[in-house]
Length: 185
Image 1 (cartoon, rainbow, N blue to C red):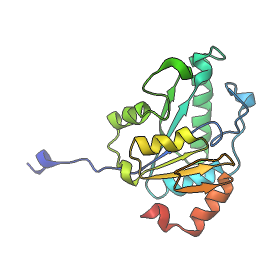
Image 2: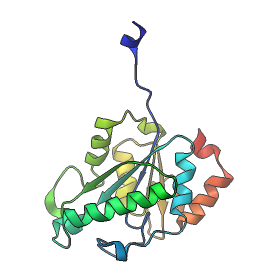
Image 3: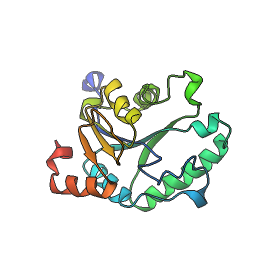
Image 4: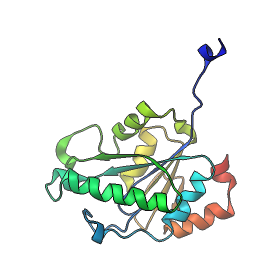
């Protein structure tokens, strides 16, 4: 009867933005031929996955709401991208996206927490031990709004309140390789 008291163990997660983090942000990328992985992204994500983090993608895709591309276009590209992660030994647990234009006042557009709430419906996550990596203020604000413990800003934008700031994915990767206790805690 011990399983009556079973509590699922809460897992730490890495929430990645897509455009500007996983792929070079060429603006409203919706076709495989236009998708260019950011140098070092697979190696960076492996640092997290090999230490027990579940990997998620949370991405605003206002190009759908603006009519620049369809949800089918997004889905096709997303499945291809997910396969490329698998080919590099990385399991993406979930991909959550906001298809709305910025003025839609939805609950899913970052920095609102709808995408994180959706992930929590399927996964028992320890948000306080989890990370967000993004290149915009809305990514870091999502971490704060959802009470996600750690955040990394990538790029040269002026982003406030990130725990760490790096100019590139490779710089971030090198730092975490040199300081593994930061994500192994």
